[in-house]
Length: 210
Image 1 (tube, rainbow, N blue to C red):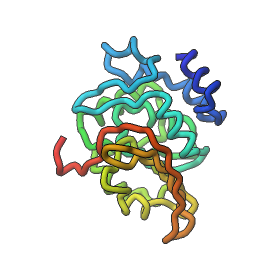
Image 2 (image 1 turned 180 degrees about the vertical axis):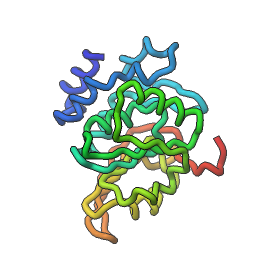
Image 3 (image 1 turned 180 degrees about the horizontal axis):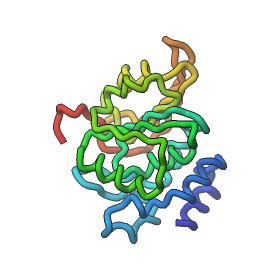
Image 4 (image 1 turned 90 degrees about the horizontal axis):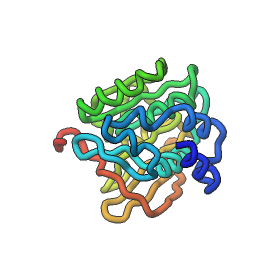
């Protein structure tokens, strides 16, 4: 994993000191099923239960660099899955920040929470819910990150739950997906930046089933 992290730094996918530090501290292998731990350093997505995956390290690095989480941020992590990205975010925002991790699959929510517990992070709340609806109880958020593709467009409710000046990173599209960074410049105005070439499982409401 050390070599992979260095490769991501050399290729400028990892550039921010706090994100690099988190990658070195929070070990991907700790968030994988036992039979896949040996594959932790592979720069590919790996399967979890219920058709979900843990994203490839390059993609996680790219998304976090777009998101630019900072110390003290309140962040909504939609599709928290294995908990790896959740733990990375919690380490970055520090004790003054907070991460709300939403996962719609109960077994995965428990798996992710168990994995994160190894790091004794106290600034995470796990929620089993439909992430397409955000988390109104804790809104507005400084940052929102989504680890599943919004096939028919960005849910309006996520945009509404961003603070002005906040940032959302989300993959969008069905067959040809783009990573979209949205900055909320006022209550009604947003700026978008798109990067093509991604592939994620779909973001779907809980009532659609697993």
